Amino acid sequence: MTRLRLHTERHAVELIGWLRAAVLGANDGILSTASLIVGIAAAEATRGSILTAGMAGLVAGAMSMAAGEYVSVSSQSDTERADIARETRELRDDPEAELDELTGIYVERGLTPELARQVAVQLSAKDALGTHARDELHLSEMTAARPVQAALTSAATFAAGAALPMLTVIVVPERRIAVAVTIASLVFLALLGAIGAAAGGAGVTKAVVRVTFWGALAMAITAGIGRLFGTVV
Image 1 (tube, rainbow, N blue to C red):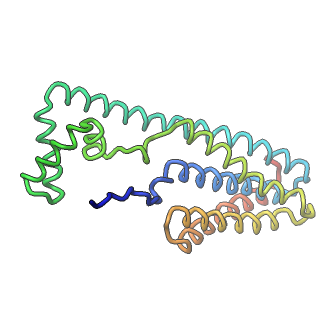
Image 2 (image 1 turned 180 degrees about the vertical axis):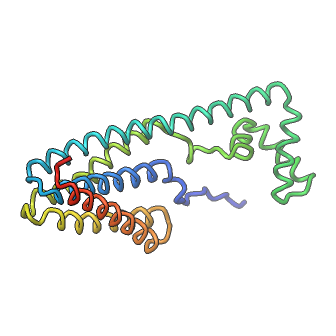
Image 3 (image 1 turned 90 degrees about the vertical axis):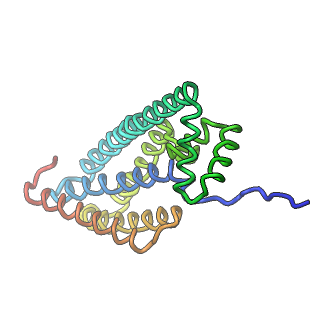
């Protein structure tokens, strides 16, 4: 008798819940803090002033990222729960219509009407709500919204990313801060882009080019503003 093999493959989509928040948080931490530092350094501020501003940016940014992610993902979670509640009511009030709807979905995917009906009946007998959530609403455990996880991940990775340009400020000579932070931050951004792309199964080169280009542009603009006004902001 043939034994069914358990499906043990892991796919990149399983990581999407935390990977998106982690990459976004670290990227924003590096870029926003580095841009702030470069802009202030271009205005010829002292190391102490730069570190103070950078630390304020780190804390404010981490809290902002956490709050923003929590609110955004909570809205998504609320929508998912509302859809599930509506589907639960429909299954309770008119299960036959829901069975017809599920059959139609499988027919559109290429099954014959007879086979589609058999599949719909058997899957509904086992877990009707789960089947409709997956095949009609396109919801699954892997992609479910997790507000707290997203908020904590964003805050932690933002702080970790922001710490990198801050450390650069501490270790380099004061007159070289702007140049050193720019170079170091672009390297950090490139590494982060490569790691995120590799973890998600995407193209590494495209991700690296994209993140370094926008990072360089952001720091160039803030440096220009700092030099233009010549004041600590």
